[in-house]
Image (cartoon, rainbow, N blue to C red; front, side, top):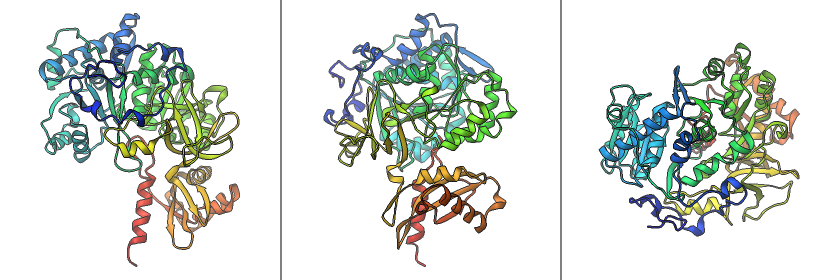
Length: 555
């Protein structure tokens, strides 16, 4: 059966291919902008390009992964991936095109399993380690998972989820380095070296990534082998400029496409390496840089803000670059990290729907407060409600197109909302200046309309974060009978003893003094923590739902 590009697919199981949106609903795909993209052929296996090709280039003995004092070379990683691929095909009966659920914290065996799935012609579906049985069962049934590879330390929830699956699911368990007594460890160790890689089409589905759930139920997005390679030849090559001696570390899980790219795909495209951490915190990340002499760190804006406060306690002289993604980087967070380390954060805007970063700048091109420009390989603009481009200085939806794009699995109605006139509409409200820099205003659903005024919640958050008493905050529109909505701030203070009306007024006056007074938070609620996804993104929708429920309750 043909793959979407008309080339014969290697997938016998056509489940994913049959659930791609109709071609007329795809965004416009552009592979002509860069010579690297133009060089792609019709047949491609991303695992071969990233892992097997590393040995062809003489990188076999280079470090690929650092983990708990161990170093996995590219050769060791390939050998383990080959053996796992044999287990999938020879023991578990994997057919090409089958979806394989992967579940583990960031460790070497998760990476080896991911490559093994692609080598065998399967489709990787990597899930967040903290998902519970109900959430896992949703994934098992949504994409009809029949094979799963899971860290043995996370067995309980997936075993519970298997009971709710609508079909039989085989599970292979492994330990973090594959040297334990778990069944996949033993099976893989017994396999001979080498594996006949599946000759996949460049347009065969390679992974299904689920969105992080900041706006509710996660959505499955499908990406091809060619898409995986495209993201390695755009941001890391032309903006970050990865060097072979780079050592990456960071907090994003590999189940999050930000983490997959940052800690696996990007370093391996250029012969670099990454440090994998099963547990992380701001202090652990800083200690990791000091211990491993890491040169680059990836985390969310909240992570950089927290690390800035303790940076002086660590030797960070090896650190050269820092990348923030996952959510908007407020200017105060940029500034405190630069003051603490001398390093300017590279802000990266990406989306699970497009796989990775498409707007960013680095070095002297960074303008603090701006997200950046469309990176090489991509185009971006601001559009109106009908998806028509707007001139510089206009505020509207951010639209993007390039070598990757949104393809929701079996969800035509949502596809129609995300893709319009060939553009991917990200759901972000931005303003583009005359130099092509994009300035974040809010998520489309985070714009607050109060007494006829349009107010950006993130703009108010940025001002609040500038106040020394504020550790974290989230701003939403709360229902109000007179104004429709009022600006309400949920604030985590540095010192909980400051909670009270005096501090609330102090913060309100601070906002009034910095931006137009109509934008100030008319209500402030002090909280111990804010709702976030596992990747650190704020879940403002949960706060909005909470406020809506409060107003609907009888007096």
